[in-house]
Length: 397
Image (cartoon, rainbow, N blue to C red):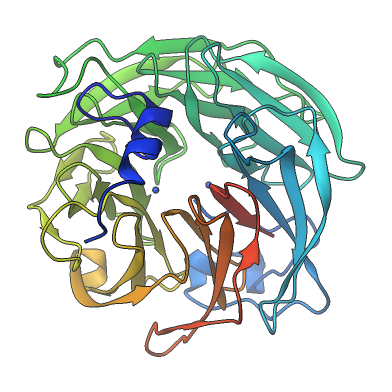
């Protein structure tokens, strides 16, 4: 809902309808080549340490709906100060329709965007000169999520409208080829109130040959074996939420044994256990979002690089829930909810150094930036939110 759909409403229809209701979602990209690193070439998530704070302004890429009233004109270009969190707009990559979700190649040279239209496509943009390298069909409709395989050779996209996922080859220039595989979620049957499957996320798991697809319409997380040479998919498992939960977004703890699932329809979250070797997921009991009665349409989790804290975007409640992560990732302890300073926070992202958290607020057309306290996980708003038309994704590098 919100970006997802429930009870047969269209994605855009839901956004318009929920605007009338009383109030009671792009994973963090890898640092670009030449960016901050840790000893022995390990990632911050692997070491549990923050990289050093970069000096000077850093790039920020913003997704939007170009076809929405008052929407953007393409992919928004901005910069942010890693110390103060202040954001400044610097332009737009035009010629990219409805870029509602963004992801960056692991080498930091290419940006990818879904084009969330009936005839779904994904677009590649070379960052050095902001040249659009072209678009490829996703084999489905309404793509709403894109991610890049850590090896950099494959792009993964999720088609919300058709309930399918696709794998695209990435060539040496960063440009995309036609899909090597497209799989539609034909089983189990759609959940109560859903007219069909709705793939909402497609992401690589802790093992490079395992990819997972979250489907809101079937209340299922699908595990696939990805052939790293041919780019084909083989289903190896299904994990089911309770009926009507509406799973939307899955985020892994850096330890790789557990993940956190946001269920947007029944306003819950769940801790999931990941089984190495098989790629199968086991979904735990539903837990509170801390937003009280009613549905707050939780959108997305992000987890700090040291695995100590997790944050959840609540669109209807206009808040971010803060959790302490305990038992090596096996337990979430709800701490509090923090006002987001905007309306309908759709997407969260941490800066590469982990000191800032960005929230893209769709209905207010703003991006809120928070300072993150490393010891407590506390959030402090870094000044006035940055205006960005129909902001639905924010990707800081």
